[in-house]
Each structure stands twice: as structure tokens, then as C-alpha cells.
Image 1: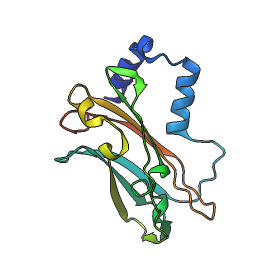
Image 2: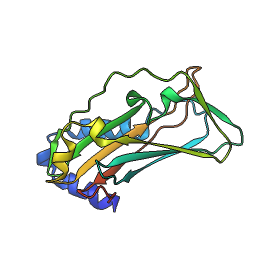
Image 3: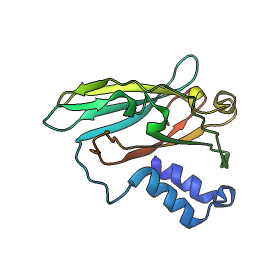
Length: 175
């Protein structure tokens, strides 16, 4: 399924107006991360779309894959602080014009959450709260959302980088 989406995007090269080098650099930044990063936090991160009555949401789930408890400051969770996760959205029929991603000023929480071995915690990000005009756009066309996240703690520990893409349709279902 992801191959089909990528084929559609590649076939629409003229609409993208992004050089091959720039496109592959964007994919590396969003999905692959830096090869120099030291992996020291054992987590797995996934993202799905949840349809709500107001607007679709991206639900992030973070699972502790290590055999030790992991203490994570809430301010670095992808659903708490908007600047902790990279989100880029484009309309499938207008991929050359990314939606404007705006960040409202937030006072980051100062507490932490302890995730036990094998435990999963989740939270959501409203597309309406992240992208201006997304509700009106979804009435016309599906939206492709790229995401990238790397857990970094204040003491310098970090996980590997996670990322992917989600297609959001009018109904908010992940396709």
C-alpha cells in the first residue's frame, strides 16, 4: 500500500517541484535520522489516525522495548509539546503546497512519566490544532502527513529516529 502511495507521488514529479536531491534529503531527515545518533533508549513509536467528531487526530504510541523502566519528561513526548515531533502535511492533489504548521506557545510541563518494561503510553495530536485549514481541505482531498520523532532527554540520552506517513481521508481513516 505504501509503495502505491509513493508511486503516485513519484509519478506526480512535475507537481512536486522538488529536486531529487532535496526530496531524498527530506525523506532522510524525516524517516531515517542521523547515522551519528547514539541509541541508548529502547523504545518503539508508532502513529495511526483516529477519526473524531471534530477532526482527525494522530495517535502516537510509545512502547518501552527495554528490560528497564524509562523515565521520560512529559515535555518531550510527541503529543505534549508540538515542537518535539516533526509533522509535514500536503494535499494529495496539491503536493507542492505544504499546509502551514503552526505552533501555539505552550508552557511545557515539568513532570515526568515512568514507562515500565513492555508498557505502552499513548497520546494524540489534533490535525486542526496543528495545521490551519485542514478541515476544509479534507472535504476536497485526502491529506498526506509525514511524521518524524526521536526521543531526546535533557541528559542527552536518545532513541533511534522513528517516522512514517499517514494518508487522512474525509472520514479520518488511515489509508
